[in-house]
Length: 83
Image 1 (cartoon, one colour):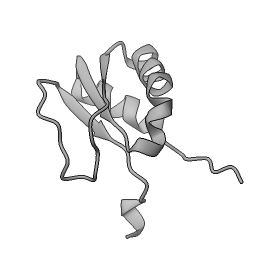
Image 2 (image 1 turned 45 degrees about the vertical axis):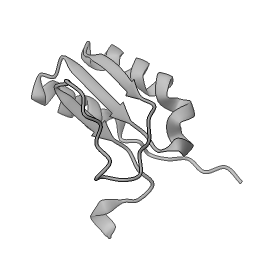
Image 3 (image 1 turned 120 degrees about the vertical axis):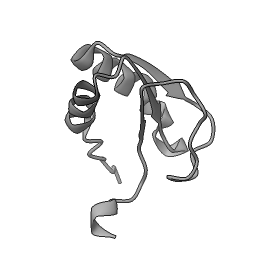
Image 4 (image 1 turned 120 degrees about the horizontal axis):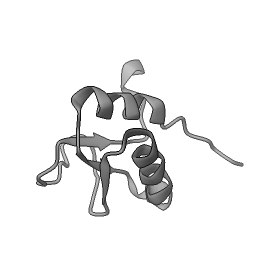
């Protein structure tokens, strides 16, 4: 069984542009980390921002890395709009 996720990359790139973020950290749960470089490349091409990939833990919205970046984008497994 194949499961495809909608990572809303267009929404992420729009937010990066809206915030005029130069350095952006992306944080992914373990199950999505294998896509990290693909996601970073896409966002860099769309926005010209420098994308930093957080490979540490990501246990939820409260697990925020302490980095000097303009914007942090986290992905998870739940759709918060429907909870």
